Each structure stands twice: as structure tokens, then as C-alpha cells.
Length: 112
Image 1: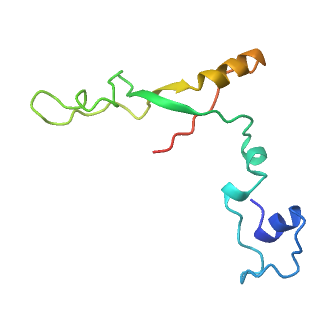
Image 2: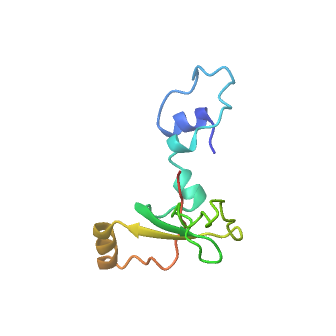
């Protein structure tokens, strides 16, 4: 990521005295860095809602009752892979299909 000084210069600000005590070597947070999408290969961002999460065996993890056995103890989940069912924004999906934007492969970023 660019330094604060490089970031400010890219926006056209005077960087002769940016006021940072570290001499402009502090890194710009990714939220404020306009080069973030290019550096990480982000092409599109779409919103959605997580509908369901399952473990490798297909056990539903988003259902609290499914994770509790008959004796009241928590069941163990299987493996480290998760299957996430996501409901995408239907309006944006329709627009994307009209513009021939493929949903064949995508990266999913999940925030808790």
C-alpha cells in the first residue's frame, strides 16, 4: 500500500509537510486507498444476505437446534470447509444478466 505522503500526492495535495511524525512512512488504511481494488483484483462488489451455512458433511450450522444433540450437548462440526448459501440482490442480478456479467466464479467476503 502507498504511504500517507504518496496517497496525498496522488490526490494533488501539498506533501512538503504532511504533519505526520513518522515522516510520511505510515501506510494508508485500505478503506481510504483508491488503489485497493487494483492491488487485490477487485472488479465488482455485490451485496447479499447469508441464508445458510453448512459444514463438510452437510450439517446446517446456522440452525441452533441442529447443533444441539438430544442430550443437550453441542454437536461437533465436521472439517474446516463451509458451504455458504447467499441470497444476492435480485435487482442487481437482473441488471448484471442483461449486461452479460458472469457470476460463474466469485470471491466471497463475509463479515460477522
